Image 1 (cartoon, rainbow, N blue to C red):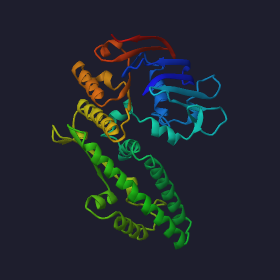
Image 2: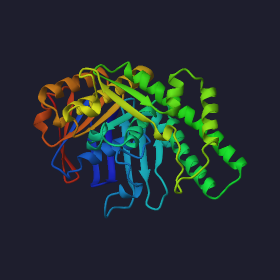
Image 3: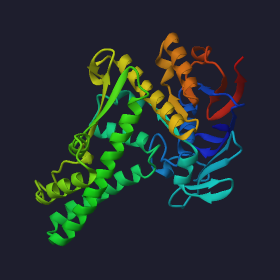
Length: 359
């Protein structure tokens, strides 16, 4: 949990410092373009992730600034964590208590999840967007999961190139062996995460579907699933219009079902989809606290602002039950007036003008 956050040359912030005063809810308000989302993006990068926007690292530094940026946080347990980028460097650099650390090390300390306006279309957009969303959540518990999905993408690209250039079967056999092993591990991690998440969901349920996921759900052992998938890969070594047509974890999808309405989430109203999305994040936060004992950090970019007063009250009550720290943005401070245990941050033109504690 964050006690103080300091940004330098980050997006439109020259230098700003936010102190949470030990509060559970940090409410950031101000007009469009004030720098509210930039604060949440900075927090998201403290998890070792590329950040909730996922943009190239050199696009984050403040325009007309030094070309680099830094994010520094002091946590409730007095641990100090930071992410820095220097102009001309190739990547971000992390530190924990002043000592060099890996980005993966940060992920073990801070468990951060977010909702942005982009996720509002999660249930109706492409399967690739849902895979990316749920794979990111699953990585909270299996820190190697994102590395495996990236590895699988690279291996599939290498396989397509090998087929296009007519590489010998020995090279293809080696690639298929790696692809099969990586694919089964990815599928197993997804199934395990969906099952554990469902335990904490009330109004909806998550499912995962795919060629290998179905094998494992049907009770086929991981070893047999790997062998079956290798046989499938070996029997599909042709290109169709310079493209490799393959089934596998890169084609899998996640489904969300509204238990109250007895409908898939994508067939429900926009408001009901928003509530389902928020319940997923709530369930994820509770799962984090249950499995790790850590208090998760939840970032809500304009997500709570579009709920009515009763729904907001219920949301923050349930977030409190999840023992999470919440950073939320909105245009109007008044819509958050009933949020308990909160500190309010007023943001204007990339500057923090004042901090007002809730009574």
